[in-house]
Length: 436
Ligand SMILES: NC(=O)C1=CN([C@@H]2O[C@H](COP(=O)(O)OP(=O)(O)OC[C@H]3O[C@@H](n4cnc5c(N)ncnc54)[C@H](OP(=O)(O)O)[C@@H]3O)[C@@H](O)[C@H]2O)[C@@H](O)CC1
Ligand SMILES: [K+]
Image 1 (cartoon, rainbow, N blue to C red):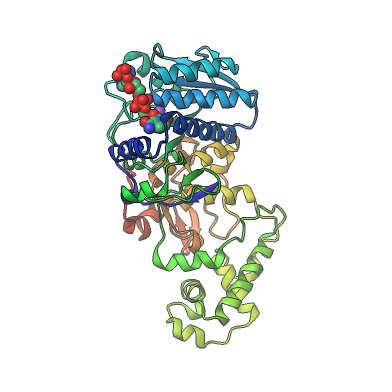
Image 2 (cartoon, rainbow, N blue to C red):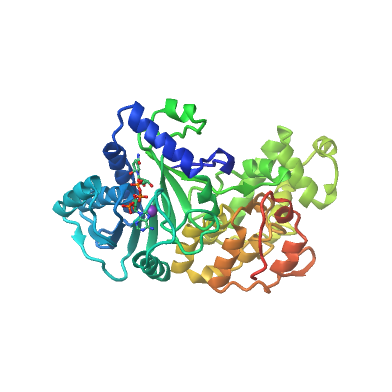
């Protein structure tokens, strides 16, 4: 699935989106039923991608409007694909289009029953026409869903969420919003936000000064979380790109560091700034020198190996372990740094020991220490916008912020590293650790 970062400033107000929608209906002959079909199909796709096992129970909450209509299209498509779909109608469906979609979904095998403890709970109760306060029938359902273990997916907007201060709303793990990102969704820092193509033409996006999204390959786009990357770190990330992304399980730490040393050597010959940053930060003989001075040095293969070792927290190359890298731990670190709250949660649910595990690199950091953006590998000193949520998640799985790791010639815990780190404090968003 395509992933893109779209800043909040490029997202739309809900009212702007409603205007775009109606404009498409009135001027381009795109009937709501057609857009609803697209919305529902993409919702069904997202559900199916999230639960491959067809025996899982899917409960779809339906309201008496077009949001509910989209949910019913998804119910029909999922039923056709062989999934077990149940419908929860909190009130009678009497509007023409949702009513028609309901008849179709039932013919395709969806079952009208509000089951308990579904595996997936889809919220197509209400969309952009919702009025607060919600009736008790809905607030009770929202509490039940939020207290349950199910995967929660909202169509367009979570029911009950009409602005960033909303308190009682369907706390979706994933939101599939339609046609364009909406500004208020940026307040849902724990949710994954996806945008589905409704087939609205680029000319309409341009007319309304909305960003045209690259829907052509896949119809659903996942929005990346905002990540603060300090200047010096950005180029170093490039130097490291793709090194562990192949998911190999048979690379030793020594092999990994040797590959990094090769990259450093090639980058040194090309006078790559990132290499100078690694050297002046980590290589004692040249610490604090200028880039110019560094590139005048003549360095041997063994020097690059030492630099690569130093970057990974070993003070000499003979201390690099020859054991296999634990890919799962490294993957958890990467999810954490990318602000991928839901995927990290799923991983911790499966492997809760990960929060107590120490990195195999010389700093021996646990996941919580990576949240300090300090003392760990420099290319991993980045700050996701939802860092506070990530830290709270780790702590809810038993992470201990008082565990100390051997860095900077001493022993430091998460808070000491966090307080002395520039990056979280320079980030252009607020990180609130007051609940720790
Ligand atoms: N071009 C488009 O429009 C497209 C729209 N699409 C989708 O439709 C969504 C917008 O649809 P929508 O306008 O039909 O309204 P929606 O949010 O589903 O609400 C439904 C109705 O519920 C009612 N209601 C409101 N508040 C309530 C409350 N507190 N408690 C109880 N009932 C309440 C109220 O009806 P009333 O009570 O007035 O009869 C309202 O009309 C949008 O988010 C997107 O998902 C796409 O499918 C494709 C193209
Ligand atoms: K919804």
